[in-house]
Image (cartoon, rainbow, N blue to C red; front, side):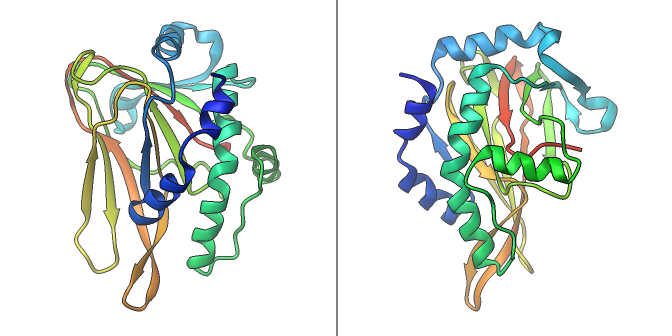
Length: 235
């Protein structure tokens, strides 16, 4: 089944419900084992990437990631183009509930045009690699004034087989409350959709802003790869 058809067939009603309630959703087996292996095998092909970041040098954690350059590999372009239109209505509803004037375009091309008007021209999809002892500190992926409030990550290795540890962590920060951590264990080929920066949550006096960060727990054994698809471009 083609990528676009696979994405269209996901249960987007359930995904919307989860995004609204928790700020994240998991879709199982979006990528095949062969597609995951293909992406991992390309990690050493420097022609595909515009930048490599060694995380320890910047106090981001321990590991390495690489930003793809344009034109993106076909599978990444198809995923980015297919997932975005499903998320735009969710993002726009969030902005409405928070009384923010921002509204997001229906298509990825229109969003990227808006990014380019704000001098955000560089692609943000990336592939990440962690060895034993690696981790990713809690952070947000903001690359300029324009950012889309939902992003995605695809797990490319099998937890418990290829690596141990390395759980995906989301940190929720509500006003005047202690922070809450959510620990996810997605499998190989799964897509995790999650809040980029903030989302609405309903309280006793209506909706309020909840800030979110994400990171990766320490890999205790093996090697872990994932691919992140961020929809806005970077300065």
